[in-house]
Length: 164
Image 1 (cartoon, rainbow, N blue to C red):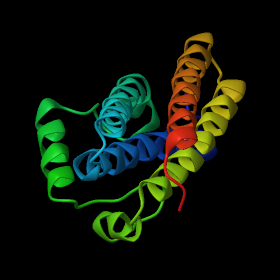
Image 2: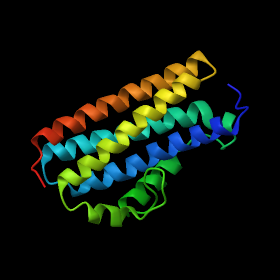
Image 3: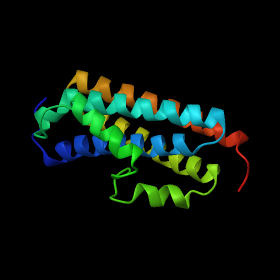
């Protein structure tokens, strides 16, 4: 797949950033969750985001001009940054620790997670629609399906989460 248009390169970059920031957010929420079921779901979401980012990087980063895919050393650094609550979240540069502090109720964290997962579904479905290869289209559709599963998980938690 050749990236002839800047929009395609930016879409790949944005997709990877969403996955990276989702991982950081879900990792923090895993550490902060007291309920075992919520903790387990946030941990699963964090692991899925790492997997999605690696898929995007392995398939598209070199072609888009962003360098080689992520290395094990970078994953270790990313894990360190997450444990120290540094870095960015979703598509904006913000202080993750401050965001987590504002989410003083589990329902607030779940509401934010639901919004970002729904956005991710829309983004990946759009990328699939505009993909120039069948391989690219399938990759984006597969990630969109996983993001839809995340939406379902979060919605199920919201049904039993205590009200604000």
